[in-house]
Length: 158
Image (tube, rainbow, N blue to C red):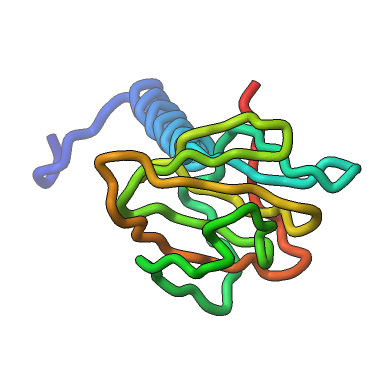
């Protein structure tokens, strides 16, 4: 020991340095992998080539910033929303309260509840319909329009 510092033989110092660098590299790679792996369940409404509404299950990135100019919250239902309709624009719909059943052109259905993001991209054709499922009496949601030309980040489930 010299002046309160521990000295190690050069081979031990090299080993410590190698372990420290390897640990830092693993931590950096681990953080990047965790960010890449962090995904949120999502369902995407889209148009088939013949403008029918369809859906696919998948995920969107949890930590990716999404370009947006505005968003709004709603707990009311407009008259046009009570029947089959296309999405008025490409938008994320984040359910905060309530559970719904959506129906698309071929009669297929899916349930939407808090924890799953809806990507409403069926902007042509007849569109989709939905109904609230008991015991829900209110659908509280956030609408986040997608910036035209931006990627939605959606990855279909395998």
